[in-house]
Image (cartoon, rainbow, N blue to C red; front, side):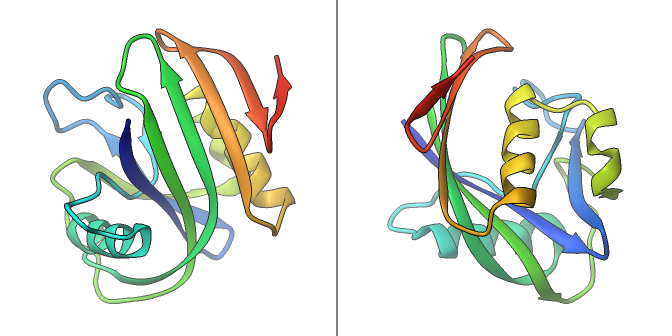
Length: 154
């Protein structure tokens, strides 16, 4: 199982999203995702998300650890994703080599192409202040079940 980070940088009522359209063989191609990536050797979740944000956006962030998302898939490598939000940042945005960076209003998120499970953790981010655990189970690109804090749905 791989360890990754994902961060949603907030500005006014919007999240900074990355439209994945520049990498070959990208499992996220054609979808909007947050900022983040894979851990390097000996990195903590905070070190990883801060480094990835700088590499992908040029911004220096002060992230808040919000939850852990476990992705289980019959098609892709399983993943433990450490989820962050960020209200405080500095620096100048750069062009990302993985896709297009764009701020999207939170009220418009349901209109853009994302993984189905992403809509669930956006709902949790907006309704809860406490740390949460979410498990998403996919068959191919289809979400077949999910659990929030150990309680199974769908």
